[in-house]
Image (cartoon, rainbow, N blue to C red; front, side, top):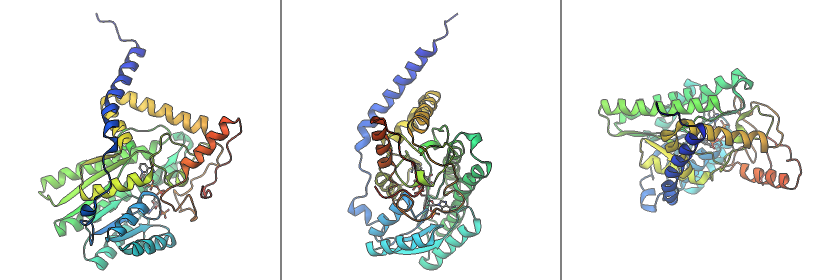
Amino acid sequence: MPHPRPAAFTRRLHLLAHLLVLLPLLLLGACATALSPDEAALVAGKTYVVTGASSGFGRGVALKLGAMRANVVLAARRTAVLDEVAAQVAAAGGTPLVVTTDVARPDDVRRLAEATVARFGRIDVWINNAGVGAIGRFDTVPMEDHARIVDVNLKGVIYGSHVALRQFRKQGQGTLVNIGSVESAVPLAYHASYASTKAAVLSLGRALREELRLSNQPGIRITTVLPWAADTPFFNHAANYTGRAPRMALMDDPGKVVDIIVRASVYPREEVPAGWKARGGYWSHRIAPDAAERISANVAHAEQFEKAGPAPDGSNAVHQPMPAGPGTTGVDGGIRARMEREDAARKTGQAPGPWSPTPPAS
Ligand SMILES: NC(=O)c1ccc[n+]([C@@H]2O[C@H](COP(=O)([O-])OP(=O)(O)OC[C@H]3O[C@@H](n4cnc5c(N)ncnc54)[C@H](OP(=O)(O)O)[C@@H]3O)[C@@H](O)[C@H]2O)c1
């Protein structure tokens, strides 16, 4: 009878598998993500709907599309912030339209599609980007926050996909871009309901793609973009019940993800892990799922519970939008700068300063 492998040996095998996968991905890390001027010309005059356009990736994508002279329909809950983004889109050369929308309300989403078609006559690309998260041990996060995460991140994407596909079928053309997460593939401890919704968004895209193939609609395309953790206001907006400021390891620059989302709207592949870290996570999980989940959980635990400074518990932007300010309306959330300050304080033996939901610009 063969001897069972000791756990340490299996762990080493898993780590080796990770390294083998990560090495070529590291080499591919420098692949171009931004569109060339010729490619950007393909975007001019196209009509894009962007949900969650008041901050983070959505705001960055809207500004990029504006500079490429697209029609950009801006949706989120904070009208005054969207008006500010619209002015920037127009100044860059695009044509904006603001439609205040709570994506968790199907009537709002229907109105968003109708207003777009009334103004521009069609929808070329619909980007389901709005999203919220909750950080904390599953049973310490209030049930209503978990439910709202599902309402916004999953039901909101279902509503958006529904109105977009109905319009695309009328046109015989259109591209649906859903923003998932590396957590669609690698569920992360302390993000349980968020990771569940993002896995569902990936599954939705896979099923819809097959429906389109079976109904012979080659002009309608669907892509799911899977970003790694990036420094947007997301982590200031997320509900947080850990008693500590939100932290994530190895955060990406949001500009890189913005470029990848815009590129995916022009060249939609089924699934687009955004950047080498997301590709590494995605493929590692396919090869060694238990090890990938365990390593990610250990890193999340150390970052969140051993390194972070104090922060009050609360639902932040999950149910109601947060007041506008640096850290809640930028493309960049200032999270890396704050983590650097926390790390520097720790090195000199000081306690990290308290977290604020609307931190000053760093
Ligand atoms: N940053 C990351 O590390 C990361 C990683 C992977 C995936 N993602 C995903 O990327 C997407 C964009 O997030 P982000 O990082 O750019 O964070 P963000 O800056 O917090 O952006 C979220 C956007 O969604 C909007 N929003 C929230 N709830 C809404 C609702 N009920 N109805 C309409 N709009 C709503 C927010 O605006 P209002 O408050 O004005 O409504 C904001 O514009 C999300 O789906 C997120 O899950 C983020």
